[in-house]
Length: 207
Ligand SMILES: [Fe+2]
Ligand SMILES: [Fe+2]
Image (cartoon, rainbow, N blue to C red; front, side, top):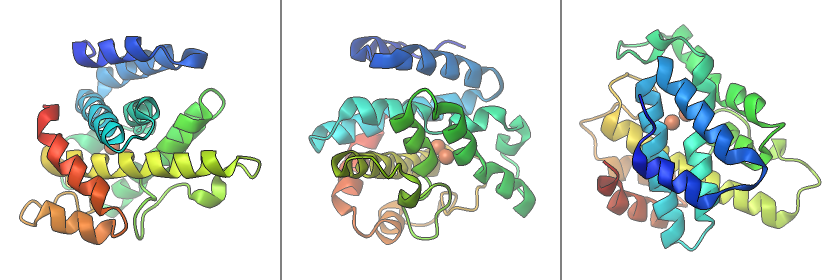
């Protein structure tokens, strides 16, 4: 299964430093082998996060690559966790490990993007994974603010994509199809209504 042309073009356009372009391509290809639906999810989240960051005049390149690699940790998890069955509490505990695994895989190569992977499920009340306390103490306040902002955008885009596309019943609220998505998001991310409104406006354009 090939990486979509739209995503390939974006990766080439940004030509990021430090080999992030090659890392992104290889991780996407690897993810596509056992988890094609996860790879498609990562591509949609990347394009949505990029569009939201652009509208908010934030770093769209950081949002794109953070989105593209946010679920890197799922690569090492068994496919049966994502096959659409109603997962057990034990299986959910396994799924949750993908944030730490993704951070571990990326941290020595692309630290900013690694934190986006580690933080993307911790940006809301009762989330999980790394937190702001795990950020390097020597980081400039501007970098800390930026990684939290970009991770917040990715987190919201991730939730929207899971809610609208995922078949698997994950116990994070993203399977509550009967509920109003905007209402769930406003409750989950009370400080981020502007990001939510923009993401909901842009999301239908990503398919
Ligand atoms: Fe995730
Ligand atoms: Fe995700």
